[in-house]
Length: 190
Image (cartoon, rainbow, N blue to C red; front, top):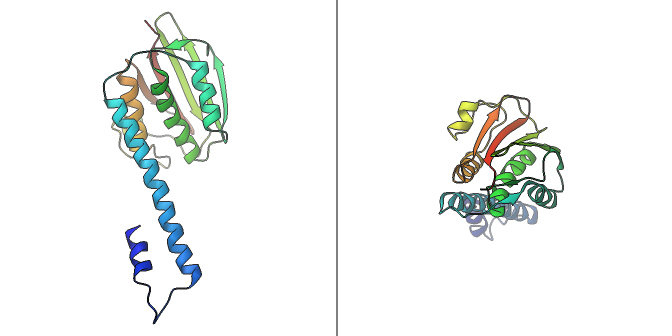
């Protein structure tokens, strides 16, 4: 942004920019602002995940409904016991699952599938997408670093989701598969 702004500022009468050049630099600035805004939202999500734990529970069905509203470009399907509640407040569930949906979209996914199973104490939610990429190394995801594989899970996504789930007694792990498939384990409400 700084470079484009400096070039626009330094535009002089002796060698003026064309309208197309000016628009190109302005478009670059706008695109950078959009990226920064998205990054700031991820940082806010991470800060919320690391702050004091809010109590409450949410319905998996409501979370899926919210994802469908927020991500209309994804065909979001579900199987299993989606009527269960999990020990994750609606805001926390929204942040965790939205991060996974957004990551899927960024990698060309058109399908996001949630498969839900539960026993008396725990829910297991498998979140799978059909985005590009091969296997992501589980160790890379666990370290919250950028994996060297062709399908990188952004550090903010893994840190934010892991922190959010962990603060409510849950876990997430990456399963070795094509696209991306995550196994989320979260307690049922007490």
